[in-house]
Image (cartoon, rainbow, N blue to C red):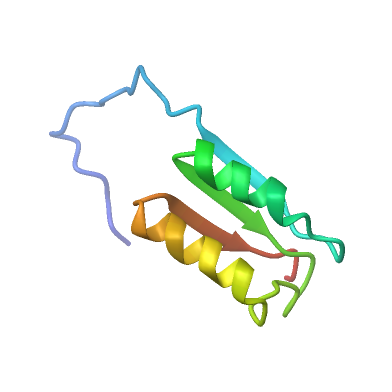
Length: 82
């Protein structure tokens, strides 16, 4: 098991990014809400409700995610499956 390097000093961040969005995908996805969130956030967590719940077959959804990534917006995809 790796042990922490005790010779390093503890660094505490005093500025945390507040422009992080969270978007819960539902069967009635509102693309306008996701689009706005991707425009105003530095990072977005997109949470699906289960396996295969993200509308990856929808060109609009994939295009919005691609554009966000091109603008260096961090996009994290998660779901509620265990």
